[in-house]
Image (cartoon, rainbow, N blue to C red; front, side, top):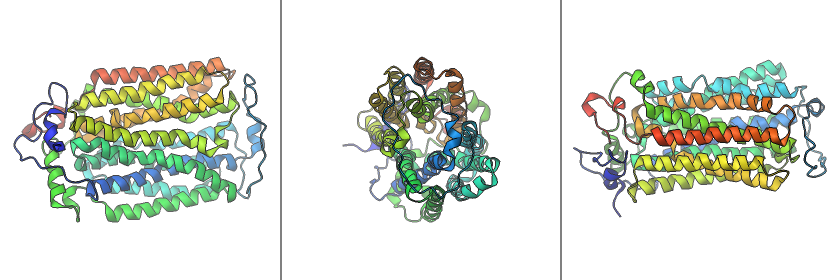
Length: 495
């Protein structure tokens, strides 16, 4: 078996332009072992960081059920009578010592949506700051800030809905810098033929955080009260921050315990990919069609993702009359599938490139097509199954699981085309990709005034069409090699 660097000459880049050896004037360094390596330790710590991040993000959606007076929400009931009642509701007595609030459905929507208004603001600034000062502290303090604000959630709720909305927006500001900061760090840490593995490991923490926090939040609310949901996850976030600060280094050069072999391997693999320019080439960057291919794909994917995340459970409750939130395992199952798919697809993507000589762009296209068209098909299917709630759960799980392929598709293509500016690029694409989370539910509500199955079919078909369009656009215009504008004149080389 040859080393990954040895196979890079024929696998990294566009079909016609990735045949030039990446390390033209430097000796090739054999790949450093993965076990106990500094780069994989970084991936594991990042994994737990994004685990905490998403636990902090989704815990409110569970706690909100116990925070709101049930008599308030009953007046807003939009349950359709097209499908028969799945089962008689079972009243289970549990701890109800937490304070209740008179918030109607519209108010709850503002509370849940306020996160995105903060989140969208710090995407591009986060990427720019990370490119200048590094991602370690930015990511660390972003999660720390979110954790501290989470601890103050019960106090903010007592002050009133306005204070809670502001607090959630501030949490969004903190989380907004995290993904661009992590991308910026991987630009210095991830060898080209290990990008899919390393990034899929680190970002898969987000899915597992959702898997664990949804049922765990429900258990905490059941046996204790909703305030402890925020206290527990907030404290976990602070503990993670302490570990992150002491165990992680910004670059391989500054890492205290990295082996010389691993340091040489990482630095040599990235030597001709990074730019030494002081200024950011904003104009060429914004004119780059490969960047806009990622923007379109990211926007389209998130439209379907947020449809699955927020609207399909609503469809199951109001149309199929089966409340998936009553069963923590069922609500977490789709995200467990996505987590597993992300881990496995990362391994598969890098193996295709290193061992089977598939080009970078070929792998990115195939994985994006599977991860976007697959969820679209099953989303449409969910709208045409009638009143079969079992199939709805199955299609939701399959759809979300297939979306995990995108973690090795367009999601890391920023590092392929401009590793030096990957954080900024992710900030740009994630800004556009946050819009579906803000407008998607509003549009869906306007399309379902009578709350019928036919109206919901329209919602699902629109989301699926957007996803398919994004997959096709990305396949046509994406690139797999470092773009000229991302390299300075002295290293004007395309791999």
